[in-house]
Image 1 (cartoon, one colour):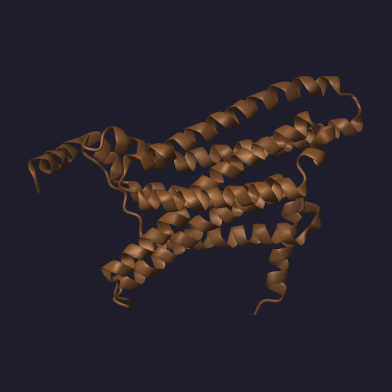
Image 2: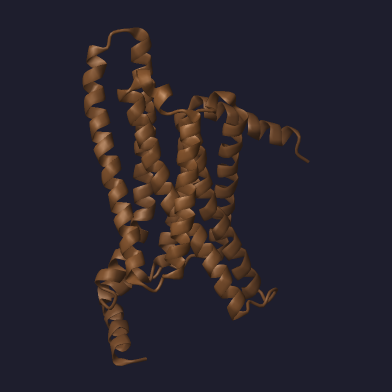
Length: 300
């Protein structure tokens, strides 16, 4: 250990740095629960024709993004548990390829999640302010085109990020994209809530009020989703920012020690999102209940 590392270690001890240890079994349990939840959401949207609309297509893709986190976590944890218990020998080359695949999946998840949150926000914006033209603006073919573009861009950028992972420019790009999407969503939400409140006073017809109420409910749901995303992914992005700004600082190294805790929060995001869908959408909640009951009735 060189002098710099020794000073950092001594400094951390003086500060009383606390490292929270996360058992691998907790990673596996949360990952499996999240995986099951998001699969149920996707199956429910596929099953119920009333949910076959652009907004729910985007929500389905958001659930698929959460699934990437769950699958990568479950796969990595299973391999680590097998290796720890001597049931599988992890060769350096095999471990490197596994890490690359998992990193691509996680990176694709964060890029696609941010992109679909922006897409759903834009969809709600069009629903509120261009209600009469919504079905001509957001058609199913256009929604599918947007979905394909987002997934292709997410996967391509993730591969590039992993290939050039040693370059700080990769971290800068991720943090910048995170900040841009937050600003984009904040601007849309402020405009939606302020103007929608003014419009709700002017619109007196019952059916229009109902449409306005439904659209605002969708906007509120997306606000909750975005808030949960920021809370769960925020510590991870702060970790990236600190890597750029103070990689050798004692305070920053104290923060770096709890990286596994940040990963748990990310998994919790993919676990909480399906609960938000079910709570905010009666139609989706009803279909999920039918799926769960059917699985119990026809199960072993």
